Image 1: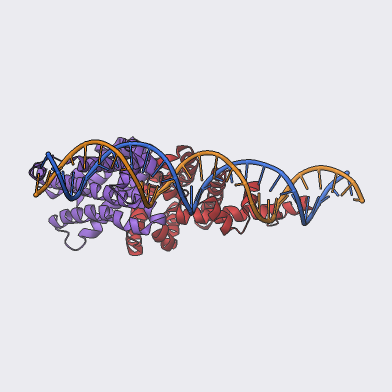
Image 2 (image 1 turned 45 degrees about the vertical axis):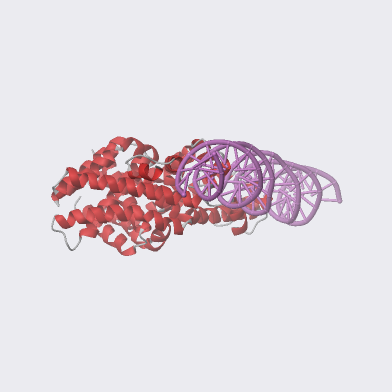
Length: 198
Length: 198
DNA sequence: AGAATAATAGGACAATCATCCAACAAGGTA
DNA sequence: TACCTTGTTGGATGATTGTCCTATTATTCT
């Protein structure tokens, strides 16, 4: 019975729901307060569980982070597929990437880029975890590079992808530091022009 | 006697030396391990003091951070003055900014930008401290903007300064995430061309 | 229905954290 | 010399951290 439910779209067992809820809360908390700034207690309280219970799902805090990274990967991966379906022109697909940025400008201004700030934090003292978080950059880098290949830039597709990623990161950092949504709009508009010139 | 020594250039009293040593160690530790990743014990051990002694100089860890920010401000401010003296042409002065980045590429690749990563970390959970750390960005923004005014961009000098700062931040983030010094060189070369086109 | 497994409840653990204190030594000043 | 400020030593503080038990209850499978 439960096996059959699993084949259905959104039918999760009770445990799977709890686990997903923990990852949801942790994802938000890690984004808003950082990995180190979020304690086990914070996650426990946010997900409405008891201390010991969460340990039934994740052995360590690092395991929770890995699950959060996997969740991010799944969500962004879904977004990329969506963009590829919605737009057929390479440039239109690249512009969808910029639309995500402007569409999320409020949270970006308030908390910075979830991928960039996570990597920056983990890069300081947790190189092992940063390697896992780097996969999020890889995901975008490869997808963007594929678009530049579509545009005929076979030789420097990866360089262009990393250039675009870097520009986006820089915009996020400055917009976050100065809590300036207008700056974010202005700079993404410049990036848009850059894409259209490729 | 001690009063007279203070009027001399590099004559610090014993206490002032100890205090400067604490700030030195904290500056390095905060950069390499982050603010939250550095404990009081770490600072105490790195500066070769005893636990209680450090409290004689700084009441709280936040006070140490403020002193570290002030130290950064003083050092970068000295750098900016130096560049202004060494170069008279506005573009040459702007290129000196890029030379700092390429000159520090090894530490940038290893630990990221000291200003950017500090602001990113503090922006998560310590808005009060991030406001203090933002002064480091202000310092560069204002100096760069003054150079763009010299180049005749009176109206959008600040926008151009923030654009340049953002580009530099993005380069630092990506180069750090991928530990890629070549990427840093390649991207700064593009920024150099951008400056020369202004 | 009964057995096996998953999930919940609640507390305990040692370690580490920033902070603080009080006694002590040193050094310059009167 | 006596005094007072500055600096040193070394430990103690309570709060918080991540991790880990052990019962007990709920769910799932046969």
